[in-house]
Image (tube, rainbow, N blue to C red; front, side):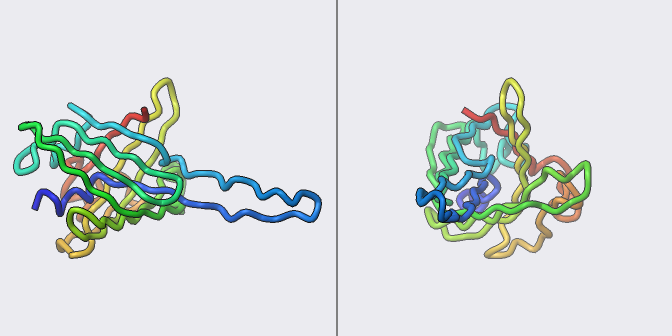
Length: 172
């Protein structure tokens, strides 16, 4: 079960296509999604759902690559490390202000267990770049509704989970 809910940890990158110009035959590098990079969640930043039993995570390091792949390293209270890998896709959330900066993510985990998680995230610039992240395993289904940009953070299962499933990461 611990591996199945690793999906709560994931996030994404989107690629923009390169356009070749007649005036400039050199293709531009596609811009990366704001989620690309390495993010760490520890202590009070961990989602309460992941900090408590049965998971007892103490640190989660998520690396989202520009090629749409990710690696998640979770360390529990006994020091046991679990690595999850997969791919992800992000998109604009389409919600009205003030939720217009919330993006969607679909993470397809390949190891250690095959699953899909869907949800939302929001990156906030500042002295420390932070990310709020809330996802739910959707395949195999757990029977709950995924969070949406329109309903905002805390909308997993229609709000029944409250803040238990909200993770905060700091960009490294």
